[in-house]
Image (cartoon, rainbow, N blue to C red; front, side, top):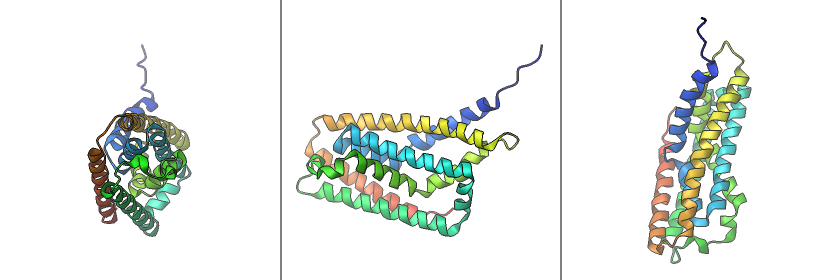
Length: 215
């Protein structure tokens, strides 16, 4: 009886799922941003922020399929530009959160409604993740290691992309739902204040760390 051959897609899906799960579930700027939007403004802005992160992932995946990601990773000038843009945006977000935390009225629900709009949250999530060179390295250097050069490259990238987006979507959704429920609960103003100060410090620290990043 002939031994059944293992489907190559099965050999790819397991490792990619684990790598995607670790990469997305580990608290980083994107997760913190989604959580902050949820705690401050509720589930809809949190979901919009998560969708923005996924849209940035989809863009990098498209660049990977066309081969442009590898070019961007290899370009020192482009990598440096993305790195400094991402670092500046993280520090900017951190300063805004610190200002909200130290303000006389710490309740973020009292902030202008424009800050709470899903559209603004989506653009914030997209900009934050798209300006993160670690995402560029992930899709430009790590993902290609799971590609079998003897098989159609584009089809494999689409398959791996679907796994990553589904995994990242579930993780971001879980954080968004949790944060949205915290928004609906009666959190003491001092706790909100401490949360904004802590997350503001995190963003500033992440921005400084990103500015020191080397490939």
